[in-house]
Image (cartoon, rainbow, N blue to C red):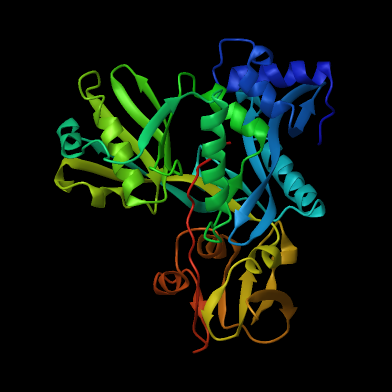
Length: 387
């Protein structure tokens, strides 16, 4: 059931969150929890007057190529151990998905504790993250840029903050983002408090135009760039040189970047890099038509896609005709035979994840039923947000 926002309910939510997530402090005094709670819808199940299970839902908008669509971030999924196995979370998740659909939400993202667990609700891996562990000696290859400079500060530096926001907005408006949260002001501020001790480094060229930025922290002699963005080679090399400026004080270096990042190609000795790609977030398509109409495709001007076995959001089931007209994609139900067929989870891999349609067919995740071949344009996820 959807919970009322009052002190009595918040006290029960807090007790459950503290127990389930091993928090040995009052979460009501935690600005990171409260900032999410203040912007959330809350769902739970009571037994004998006690809140036994809980799920938090935050509303965002996400960029899918040239469209901004409603997205729900699901988190703080919790039950007391004595209540597990009673089906409360299943009941809550189904209610949430129905409510989100009635509110016009196109899809949901979450960070799974178990991919198998959330797959039963229609979620599937879509966002992956690339991390680099770097031999400190590799930074000796970089030199201070002859033109431009790196500015360093913190989030409360309004000038640096505005330069970061400008680069962020430019990338979001590039028409190439596939499944990227449009961060609101409260979320940006929460990121700063959630990662204490964070610094910002911004590279500006000789014309004072910002071309790269990085959020980083130094913890126990480890330098970790937790978000890095650059729009030019010059900006990337400037930030790598800046990182290298810490080799006298740091013994370990790590860069966390988007899956599509090719920053390794700026290193002359890639053998000294340890590169890992890991699953990060799962997605659940709530409104197939809204998602499919955001994504362009090449090949034929129209194609029929069949969605099968969506047992919760059953309005997605059936055959959908995608038609491209003057760059616009329209998605409508049809009684025609499908060119491609797949489950909602496998379509999620293709439409919101990194898997191409051809790869999905070769993996036998999607069935090709005709020679009407298409391929969806694949964008990227430049910025990562954890719920």
